[in-house]
Length: 147
Image (cartoon, rainbow, N blue to C red; front, side):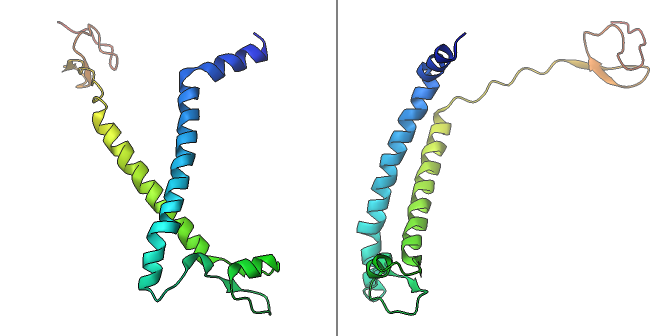
């Protein structure tokens, strides 16, 4: 079988296509959550905390002063952008929580796995080992069993 045929068989298999759709939808969902955090959630929180713009919070590691993160980055200054990091952490937590809730609900819809019925057992009268009830000889002590 040629490598191209194997690749084609792999690529058109249903689960690969499902995964591709999931990645695309997940990426779009990530953008929605990022926009929600930076454009809807963080501005009111920043306002309550004294008109703080979280996306502009940074620690300047250079000796020069910069008023904004954009100015510092434009000048090539070394900075720790902890405000952007906080937004990213909140993005992640929201996405992880939503995915948890979705998977939790999907698992409730999935039928419970069917448990196989346990095989009936009996005890060997010679060595007291638990064995299959249909056995005519004990696999442990090899004694012949009367049914």
